[in-house]
Image (cartoon, rainbow, N blue to C red; front, side, top):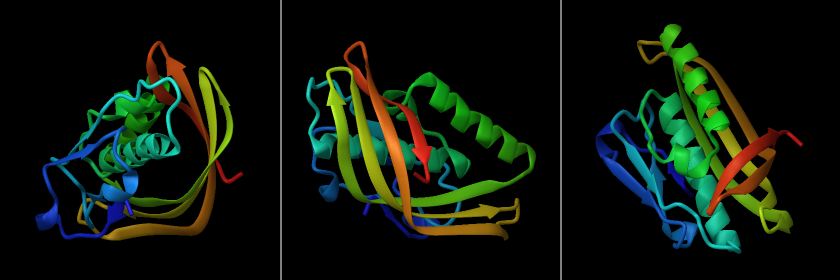
Length: 173
């Protein structure tokens, strides 16, 4: 699983997710609290016909980067895996949380991934996630929690020049 629970002391400073490696061989530990200082790296996906494994690595990098940012950390990988409008959405959500002095701890694990359609510049994926989040106040106290054992999400990837990136996603379908 790309997400495993660890204590803050066990968090690495940097995670590299490669578009060339099998995601089952990669792991990311996000911890129980804000993952400040954790930097996720992702090699830009530029192959003409990405494999299922490469597509999963891109989605894993999206989920991990989004999680780190919403926990109050930073991730430079987001622009490599998502279009600017999605990056802006995540940044706006984090800014809103910061004003409220809250953070989100998100644990999303891909259970299955199906390629629904594939064209030279567009790929549609249907993914089943195990999803859990917690919203914490400034003292680390849990405000709310969500657990969805089977969350279905449709991801639309597009090719911008040479790079494959996430263009949109639709949850709950």
